[in-house]
Length: 63
Image 1 (tube, rainbow, N blue to C red):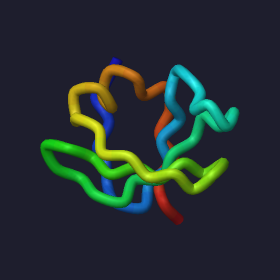
Image 2 (image 1 turned 180 degrees about the vertical axis):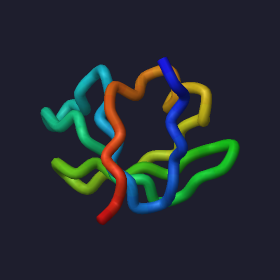
Image 3 (image 1 turned 135 degrees about the vertical axis):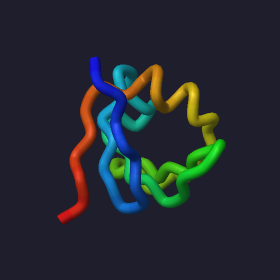
């Protein structure tokens, strides 16, 4: 598997869904930690880069 290049505005599809039922998150901040916004309910989280890389199933680039 090739590593993804993450950029602000990209949509990440995770392996496990958020409690609201959505699998997709928008990247708001990139660095050692990521700030992600759930596209289902709008909830924002800070999560370690390592966890994002491990749990990413698909990446859609911004238009």
